[in-house]
Every structure is written in structure tokens, then in C-alpha cells.
Length: 303
Image (cartoon, rainbow, N blue to C red; front, side):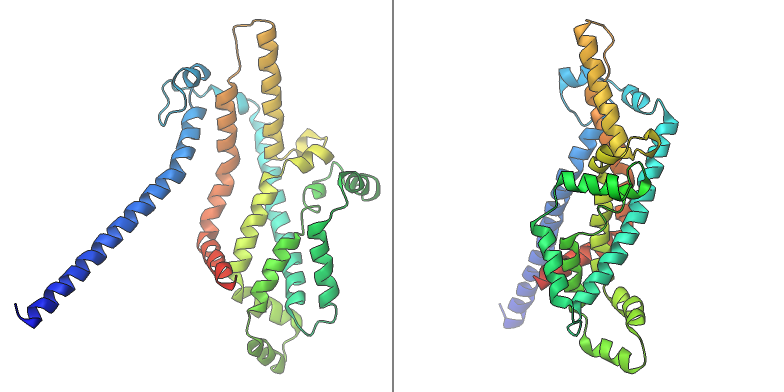
């Protein structure tokens, strides 16, 4: 066998190994995707099953006894559910927008070395990560002094600033080239113009990542409504589902005590609530997915 033939066969072997490696990698990623997708499919299947089928056959990928009674029970008052969705959407969008504005301004100021109050404000934001005022002082402040109870703002303002998110955004802003910002100053740009027209566009992956986390926090928040909201028309969707679940549990316990034959679909209702709660935020994730992945990768590189 000549040297040229040996090189050709060696090249073919490397090409074949490369193809085999890509195939194995795709198979592994496919299995991981299925591992993440199957639980969600099980939740959907359980939400479309009867309570008796779940008790008899367990959780399956395909409903053994198809039923929409759980969704009918939850969506019985469609106006109330629609209103709760509207409250959650308003709170999530407005809260995330205001939160990102405040936190990005704070983080940008902390990233500028020439800012005189950089160290005191950094200590202040770090201090809030270690200690909090507690539930009772917070409740007194919000209800007795700020008078925000039973107002939509109470679902937005308390969670507007996260110390951890501010520090993460500061890391992204610190990575911006100082020469670029100094050149903008020489050309006559002020701090506001530099922030909105240069710092924000260059930090889009980090802002999208923190923005998604902020949206998740607002969307999944039900505890704030439990503390400060008494008006049913201001219930967000998560707290409304919590109220429905408690009512369903109490009703089931009452039927067991009275030995009634009609039982509410407790297990399917739980799964249907999970489907209703996760749907909109999963849809929003599709729009920021590429920025989210890029932001995670950049954060891991920066360490």
C-alpha cells in the first residue's frame, strides 16, 4: 500500500469518525430533549384523564380515559380566569419593564469607575442580599404607610429590584470597552445617550437573560397577592389557581365526610392548572431564547 493510499484511507477514517461522533451527539441531545419533554407530556395527559384512571393506571403518556372535566371545572367562570390572566400579563410586562429599567440604570452606574458613590451603593445592594427587613415590617410599610394593599402596584413594586440581578448586569456593563464609551464622550454624547444608544444595545444578551428571570418571577408570584390582595378582580392567575385548588381540596374533603358519590377531579385539576400556568410564559421564552442562551454562555465565560 502506497503512502498516498494510506493518507486517503486515514482521511476517510477521520471523516467517518466525525460523522459517527455527530450522530452520537445528536442522539444524546435527542434523548435529553425527550427527558425534558416527556414530563410535560405526562402532565398534559394527566390533565386530560379522569381521577379514576390516574388512580388505576397511574400517570401515562396517553390518557387511558379521556376527559376534560378538570378544564371545565377550572374554566367554569371564564370571565374570572380571563381577568386573572390579564392581571398577570399586565403585572409581568409592566413589572419586568420597570424592573429592567431601574436595575440596568443602577448596574450601569456601579460599572463606571469614575462614579463617586460606586462603593457605598455596591455595599448597599450587597447588604440587601444578606439581610431583609422581615415580613412584619414589610407588611406594615406597604399597608400602613404606602397604602398599596388592594392596588395593582403592590404586585409590581416590592419585587422590582433584585440585588443579585443588579450585580450580574454590572458584570455585563463592566465588560464594555472603555475606549468605545470614551470616544462617545469625546464626540459630545452625554451619559443618557451613551447608556440608551450604546450600553443597552451592546448588553442585549445579558439584559434578555435577566429580563426572562424577572418575567418568571412576576408571573409565578402568588405570595404577594396572598398577603396584600383581597379584591378578587385583582387576583393574578397563579393566586387564582391557588384559590381554586384550595376550594377543590376542601370540597373533596367535604364529600368524603358526607360519603357523597360525586367527587371533584383533584389530581387532573392540579395538572390542568400547571398547563394553564406555564403556557404563556413558555410562549414568551421562544422570543428571547437566542438571547437567553447567549447570555448564559457569556456569563459562564466571565465566571
